[in-house]
Length: 66
Image 1: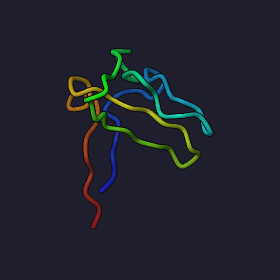
Image 2: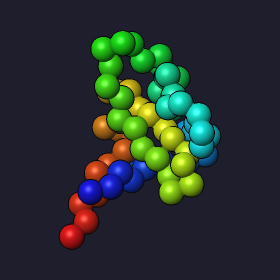
Image 3: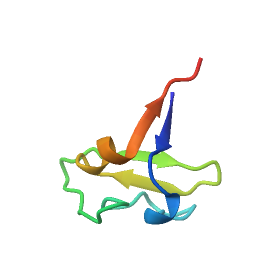
Image 4: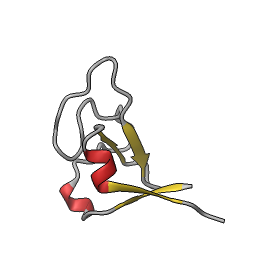
């Protein structure tokens, strides 16, 4: 299984390698609360993006690999 963006990667605020995962949604900038469990994805180069419950279903799809 892997995550696939439905939108242009330039629309996303990626957190660089060697940084902590974002504390807010990488698309809409909504802050995460202590109770949130954001959907996070990393590129092969180590860049990270995290999405809130509203943005994840609209902008990220799960791709099944055989």
